[in-house]
Amino acid sequence: MKVMVVGGGGREHAIIKKIKESPKVDKIYALPGNGGIAKDAECVDIKATDLEAIVDFAKKNAIEFAVVAPDDPLVMGLVDMLKAEGIPCFGPDKKAAIIEGSKAFSKELMKKYGIPTAKYETFTDMNEALEYLKTCDMPIVVKADGLALGKGVIIAETLEEAEKAVKSMMEDKVFGESGSCVVIEEFLTGPEVSVLSFTDGNTLIPMVSSMDHKRALDGDKGLNTGGMGTVAPNPYYTKEVADRCAEEIFLPTMAAMNKEGRSFSGCLYFGLMITDDGPKVIEYNCRFGDPETQVVLPLLESDLFDIMVHVSEGTLDEADVRFSDDSACCVVMASKGYPVSYEKGYPINIPDYVNNVYVAGAKLDENGKLVTSGGRVLGVTETAKTLQEAVAAAYRSVGEIFFENSFYRRDIGQRALKALEE
Image 1 (cartoon, rainbow, N blue to C red):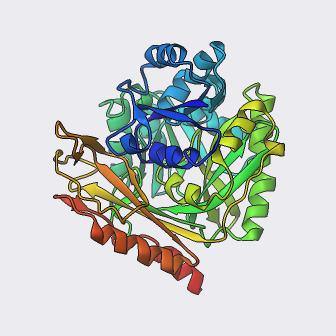
Image 2 (image 1 turned 30 degrees about the horizontal axis):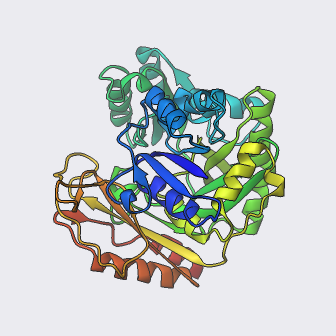
Image 3 (image 1 turned 135 degrees about the vertical axis):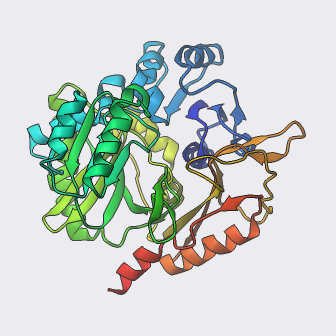
């Protein structure tokens, strides 16, 4: 089959490498892809948000199946447009993608259907938001309602910080129109867990749990990023917690979306916090998480493409979905200065014997050499029988890769390893 994967980051590289293993896949196009993805798929220079050009390409090239991976085209309705042309897709339609596209919507959904989450209030008037902050305990969480490249969430330690966050979103428009509405919610404490799930709206199958590391610097310090590394499985996600999540969060969310006439088909991501009161939802994503995908998919033993087809056809209950009992660790190698400003264009040297590298922010220069072009450049993943071995292997592989101005956290997985010792 001829398959098109929309997107051009490390997540898409992980998806492409996995579906490439399927005997049913003959040809993969990546739109736009990147310099590293070019080794595994034919890259086409069309932006993931240029919906009409994507649909036009799909029709002209007789695409038989599409995987829409990033949030923007999903929220904008790319799946609806492709399906209207008779092209089967993996990914939710516009009505369902709102679960990530609007934090206000997802919070209202959880309140309406009794799905556990943090207490919150929503504001479209800045002065009302500022007045409300004066009544809140600190720290507090301020969220831009819309999409913000994973950076629209600010944890404010003081009232002054919270007011600054609200003004930056609503007055200064640092996230554009995404900050026209803000959600202010209580600060929860406890271990965070990411759980990706396959769902066709009738059946929901959770994948292996993972632990993300969002802060830029060791010890969970520095600015929030799109993710500096991940490990899987997450030791805090015990069988008891998993059972509670299925009963109180996963299945009720699927049912709630169905009742709202927004049946969800694709990958539904649950960002969870295990509080003293039990698991609660921090956020939903309408797609594979990045970089969680880079540790979850290497542990998938069955055919990802086959699962995606079952999801698109509404027959997920018939799919073979199996994960290894091994562990995985992904260390993100970034450009110095990320997530603020950084230089680009440095040559990347990855030895041939380092295999599990997912390329995110890199392109091919005029000589066909891979050079840095983004903040998060590479996701270096290794799997092993134990988490300790996977972490050690990932850092060994990182040590074999070089590009100028690179930086990475040196403590990915340490919190999880400590939890395993408790």
